[in-house]
Amino acid sequence: MRYISTRGQAPALNFEDVLLAGLASDGGLYVPENLPRFTQEEIASWADLPYHELAFRVMRPFVAGSIADADFKKILEETYGVFAHQAVAPLRQLDSNEWVLELFHGPTLAFKDFALQLLGRLLDHVLAKRNERVVIMGATSGDTGSAAIEGCKACENVDIFIMHPHNRVSEVQRRQMTTILGENIHNIAIEGNFDDCQEMVKASFADQGFLKGTRLVAVNSINWARIMAQIVYYFHAALQLGGPARSVAFSVPTGNFGDIFAGYLARNMGLPINQLIVATNRNDILHRFMSGNRYDKDTLHPTLSPSMDIMVSSNFERLLFDLHGRNGAEVARLMDGFKATGQLAVADERWSEARRLFDSLAVDDAQTCATIAEVYAQCGEILDPHTAIGVRAARECRRSLSLPMVTLGTAHPVKFPDAVEQAGISKPLELPAHLADLFQREERCTVLANDLAQVQQFVAAHGNRGKPL
Ligand SMILES: *Cc1c(COP(=O)(O)O)cnc(C)c1O
Image 1: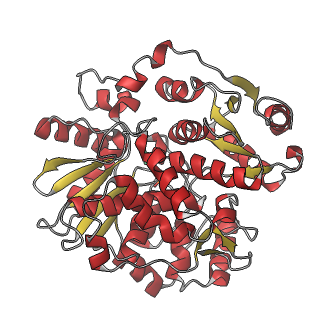
Image 2: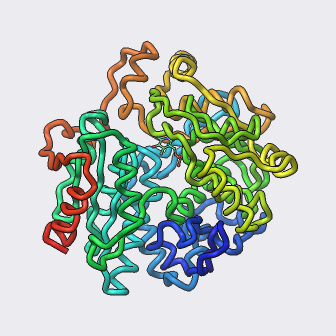
């Protein structure tokens, strides 16, 4: 499989190089040159496969030519073997024909484990083959950091530096990062906010001189491998609910358009999906686009669903590319305009196409809490605030009561106790067994000033399993 840039000017790459690439050299994002398409018979024949074998069938075309079948199978078996539930991604029923797909049984209790557990193993495999080492630098407001560290902790060839805003992530989220100890794991608390952390990552990607020739790899969802891994659970859910003979609807809590884009790809690969709902919190740039053709940058509003607090959606460009007939020059023009003005609108017929593909809803904190309370009263299930946003959108935007509606359950509620408490639920939430002693574990973390030079110096001094590069 070859991958091309959404801006049309960067060289096409194979899977191995895309895995290591981050942004394309023209500023675009990589997408597959041709999407594989499966027949209904083929999809139906996967109905009884365990998760890792289904993952192999769905993802195999994307890695073809870079990763041998036997290696890929082994990697997938290991990846999904670490999940705490036998079904890996079980469905929980809320109401008749209404379900939550629980994607939070991985090591860090959020759906990002599906992609980052795989990414770490793929990186190590490819790097061992090439006899190379890489450095990962990432910024996190919570979930990405812990999932990336858990995914990379066993990697021989990767050093990982995760920056979080000092004193501005929840204690559970901080401890999930800082208690994973290893000479290749480096937590940095920055005396600044999340955007400061993000800016330092961006600046480091733009000028990698401080790394003395070591390559920097991205772990946010601009990395194609993350999107790829997320396609699988749409197939998994649909097969559990009578697909592909029966069509299924999905409601997806999203910020960076990563998870929902994976659903869009699953549909394009032949999975019958009758509705895809974009569910956002008050940071609703995606909903403003879908409902009014206004993709305009707004200020950031902190919410009870912090993992969706974004101003712009990094994967939206991948959709723009398809909406414009995969014309890279057109996308480059739109994105240049957006960079200059903070605003973007598309031609009417392109927007109509987007509206045909997606429904959308923005859900504020009050509605989020009301939904958590409503579902708890109805069936005793406690939702995390991100998942609650998805359920609210599912209930309001649903087109067919006779088809299954699946909301992606993106996190375990124990990670977001504030929202659960504000919803008026006093039942104590318990950490799952593998995290039960989280509050007793030793933490390791370095506090640094909000200063790029100091951060880069720190990376250069520790980027080779704690030793200088
Ligand atoms: C990251 C995250 C999201 C949003 O994912 P996107 O890739 O932006 O679609 C939603 N919920 C939780 C709990 C997350 O950690």
